Length: 187
Image (tube, rainbow, N blue to C red; front, side):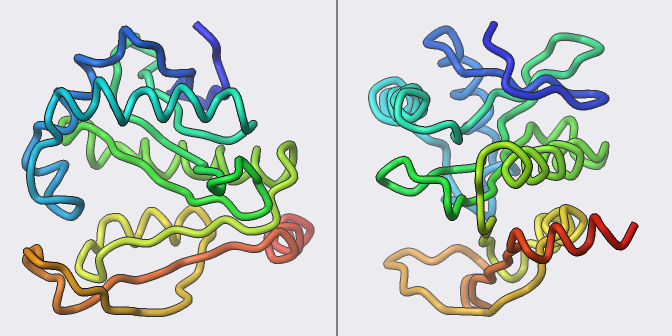
């Protein structure tokens, strides 16, 4: 197991090809997918596109997507990411997370996001962490705020088959290295 980062309650490790079933299970939960696509991700897409893409990123960037495992049980609970740019660069990375509904409300997303932000700025050379979610996804917005990101803007995208709440737009949040350093020195 190639560990990327450990927190008090989570281990973030590299994905392997053996994680297909865990990803399929995660992406088949309607609650988990509610603000993402609104539907399950087909197994073939996970096997042939999603997981190979995650694994490919490990070879081209120090950032990426990491399997989140509960330290106390060893159970897969989802994933967290500092997604690099298409070229593998880490000047700007997208913070993301997807956790099983059964662990929502335990603070895992916030704990993992804070640790990733810290590692990104302290060790990976990240200059800006950004994230976006649906404006109506208040739980995800709270996680972003607790991780230190601040609201930047609301914007509207056009979808052929919009999800409920799409009419309220998407929101973008960010945290820049200079602001992160300032907040750490103020403590």
